[in-house]
Amino acid sequence: MDQESDTLRHHCGVVGVHSANPDNIPEKLFYGLFALQHRGQESAGICYRKEIPEDGSGRFVTYKDLGMVSTVLSRYLNKPHPSTLGIGHVRYSTRGGNQLENAQPLAASCNKGTAAIAHNGNISNAALLNTRLSTEGSIFQSSSDTELILHMIARSRQPDFKSALLETLQDLEGAFSMVMLHEEQLIAIRDPWGFRPLYIGFSEGLTVVASETCALDMLKIRDFREVEPGEIIHIDSSGLRSETFSPKEKKRRCVFELIYFARPDSLVFGESVYLTRKAMGAALAMDESIEADLVMSVPDSGNSAALGYAEKSGLPFEQGLTRNHYAGRSFILPTTSQRELAVRMKLHPVREVVRDKRIILVDDSLVRGTTSRILISLMREAGAKEVHLRLSSPEIKFPCYYGIDIPTRKELISNSLNPGEIAAHIGADSLRFLSIPRLKECLQDGEGYCYACFTGEYPIQPREV
Ligand code: SF4
Image (cartoon, rainbow, N blue to C red; front, top):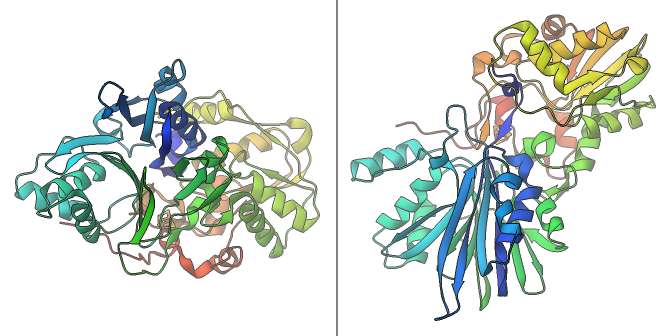
């Protein structure tokens, strides 16, 4: 199996930049995307408006490839590329979809001008819209939802780009936080439910839109706000215009952004990712009945929650697992010994910490349980007396239709086994998940989130053809 799929995967991160004066926009996109690398490692790309000084005009230049930001886009660090606007994208492709044609941004010219788009999320009625457009004669070059949006704009009977875009947005369901370029304009859009985060920041003539605030920090931008659910913002040389394109829906922000995806130094949905994760760990400790000697995390994703757990329980926190940051991705690993080796390459116990200890081991979530099983056996091999696994999320039982790659229901361990059975299966002495009510207590507005992968109650039903 694919060892990496024992974790949840994000699809994308986006950045958009507009400058009042010509600036090195590709370089700014590079640094913004670099900060968002955790949101997607399969491909990276930018599209910017190249200035033609001779006649004051410009044209869109797109560059994208499979690989990490530092590899794909480092060419833009060597010399200045004067420009006033651009967008960028990092992508993690869904299984089987690691293809260059699905890399973003996508740019196209039509009767409504030249436009480019970078999108984070999943359009949950994409299959339906795709069939409609294909029947009407559209030919698609990729399988991404993003191309669909460009087609819908191009085929719209509205007289101009702006009204065609507004018409298109009315037909989209699901998650879309996106940045677009149209002629000399940067556009930021967030779906009415607010599934994925999107921020806009300002600094001395520079406007930057990004999935998380860590990208704004990278560009030294301190003045920022969220792009509101259902908001569309147009930015050009005359300033910024905001409008609401959809009546307010009930907010359904993805709680997994806070549990696992976002960087701990980011704000998402107005919440500090780090502090929220600590609160989740503390909430787990509140209901604890087990006696233990120390608290450890599965690094890096379990770090903040483990610190919160330790602080609340009064137990010492130890870094009992060492993560090798140079271990790359591991792919098809058919045998148990190969899978064990892959985990060993990435994570290894510190024998002197774990030996003869009763340990609370904190991780963010449990998907298939394969990594935890190997990790716990490594800890026992290193002399751990007891290992009690604590997860700072509820049990994942259902797939996601809004931009997160979750294995099928059959593959999710919490679908077939209860916590006691999972503990026995992975070799833990005990196992507990954070409950949904406790999770809600850790959030400022617990009712304004999506919990569908725990409950199966989807805020928008995915629509098949
Ligand atoms: Fe996030 Fe889960 Fe909802 Fe998907 S189903 S948006 S992963 S909370």
